[in-house]
Image 1 (tube, rainbow, N blue to C red):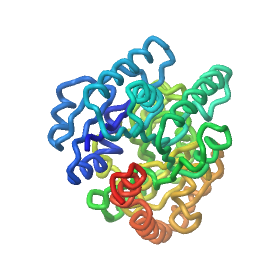
Image 2: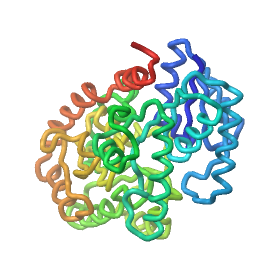
Image 3: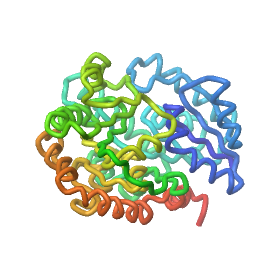
Image 4: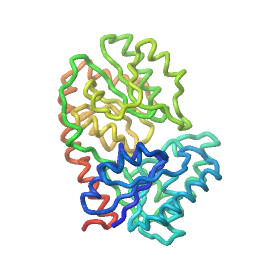
Amino acid sequence: MKILILSSHTSSLCWFRVDMMKELVDLGHQVFAVGNECSQQWIETFAKDKITYFGIRVSRNGINPLSDIKTLIDLYHIIKKIQPDRIFAYHAKTIIYGSVAARILGYPEFYTLIAGLGSVFIGQTPKIKFVRSIMKTEYGISCRFSRKVLFHNPDDRDYFVHEHLVDKDKTEIINGSGVNLERFVPVAYPEQFAFLFIGRLIKDKGLVEYLKACEKFKLTYPHIRCLLLGPYDTNPSSIHRDFLEPYIRLGTIEYFGEQEDVRPIIRQSSVFVLPSYREGTPKTIIESMAMGRAIVTTDVPGCRETVQDGVNGFLVNVQDEEDLYDKMKMFIEFPELIERMGQKSIEIAKMNYDVRKVNMSIFKAMNLVE
């Protein structure tokens, strides 16, 4: 079959979907990928894995209707050209406009993945509420045009059902994007204790709370390291360089920027921390789990599913700097927890988040396998 994968972010195709696309190729399907970057380099990168890549015009966080019309037109032409047997879309813009283009062209085999609700469903400013109302209407249309709608966690699914955006019998829940257990393997712990945060540099990831906790640790436990990895972003809740710079200059954190391969940085860490306000299922958490790291994360949708509180890490209250600091401090005061909880993380990653199992659940939902 011809399988078309739609994303609003080209790099995300490599981070989150490359194992899925490779497996589809191995099963004998023709795979086509769509992202937001139009360059020969990306075409050649995907071609190495026998994947045909197309770039489209898409503004991931913009609300300009003229820009969105261009996205719709580009997707219309690509779908018309490829004539796919199955279309799989994630990210809001490609879900919304991809489903409309497929509907216009008469391609009913459209499958949607809601991998997280994002900042628009968290913020409470008048502008965000207005954008949210528009997106809910658009998501409702997309879900009606979709054969199946997949979710990473039950809270997101229940929200869509409660808001009458999708019929529950059309939905399925999958265990995130999965982790490649051949690439992310258990590694030894560093000699010097270190916390690690990986994520886009936005407030909704709980970055400010992490920075404040690191500030306290540097005063009371100056020997520990606090690591930070991730790109700056155009999200409405993004952190600006001017805000982060003092933490870097004073040595509160060690900032590694954006890295194609996060494994060398996870190797330097003792405990992984992500105090996010809401997630789908954080890939950074399950990758760290697979490498044997205990987890500190928030008791919110998407995050809470990855941690058995007190078993492979700790759950903390959202936007609670004191609770976050106290739970992180447990690993300094009781260092035996690092290895004990890290081993449990490995077990949970193998049981629930093996990318091959996750991909198979997606393929079954798309009627590609029995």
